[in-house]
Image (tube, rainbow, N blue to C red; front, top):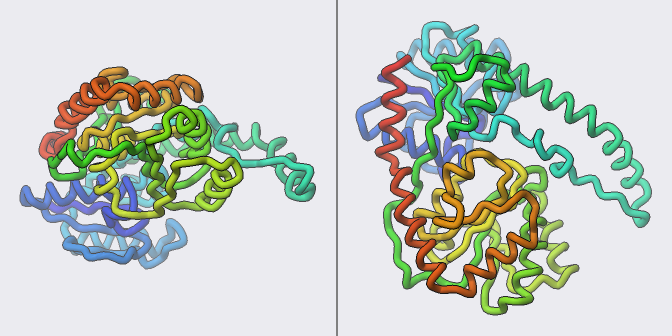
Amino acid sequence: MNILFYFENQINPQRGGTERVADNIAQELKRRGYKIFYLSRRKVNGIYDVPCYFLPDQKGNTPLNYSYIKKIIEELSIDIIINEGGNTEDIYLFSKEYFSNVRIITHLHFTPLLQYKYFYRSLYLPISICHPFYSAINILKWIKAPLNKYNLLKYIKQRYKYMYNYSDKIILLAPSYIMEFCKIAKVDYPNTKCISIFNPNTFPDVYDSDEKKNIVLFVGRLTYEHKRLDYLLKVWIKVYKKIKNWDLYIVGDGPDKDRLIKYSQQNNIQNIHFEGSKDVAPYYKKAKILCLTSITEGSPMVIIEAMQNGVIPITYNTFSASKYLIENKVNGYIIPPFDANQYANTMIQIMSNNCLYEELSKACKDSSSRYNIETIVNSWENLFQTI
């Protein structure tokens, strides 16, 4: 069977969670005898052991791109296309409306609601008397925000309805997301077109408790719109004043990095390290606690990766998949949305009680076996047999 994986950026596992998931699944399928190909809009530097192809037009869903995809399907004898760009306009590019002779699986990597639920928390529109011009612009944007929120939901509804009508299968990251998707798309629930498959483990099954240090870890792209790392910095202010011998490491890069560093300096936040974009594996080996304060997520790879390394995850309950990844107070903590005091107290409790840490860490490691790549790809193979 010949399978074509598509993502807008060339599928490099070092560049992001979506790419890492896609490459892990593709490599395991390749190991099992499937012929795998990658298709993208944009090239990404790296070494690839999968044949890579690129759309001739990067700018949109154009006739030139449709013709090229048709040619690729025919020349490579493609049986299945897995579209990893389910959250983008690429659902209109990889559609049964245009390619009826190939099976199309659309993979949705985020919660179906995206940032709609906490829309206003996703907006960075500061108002200050020191910057009257920009403040005036931001006031106008705040006035327009309700309309933008309405249009976002309208756009999501249209896109999901089209996705449902013109995909053979839709893969979501947790069972609860199926209900959310069907409600938004206004299709029957349950149905056989939408299924859930969890993301797989990323790293080899290696864990050494002797390497652990007093480290709290954040891993992710530094963007205000989704990750809200500023919420974690506010929690950390409460924590480091009481616990002096722990450090917070921020691993990742993004458009808000400089602003977050400036905020840390202005507030004299101690024991914090902005590491930039680096290989995360060494940090998982040393860290004891992973923190997420996002306003929206899908099924975060960082939680699965952390648990595989015995790192205890703490997250706000802002996405319904959290309850499938974390058993609250057993192998991590799910905090009521934006309760900074409870978040800080939970961190302090783990830091102050080594027996509690050891118990939770072991439970993390034990539960991570649910996401072994072999188990997850078995689900994908079962899916292939049904379409």
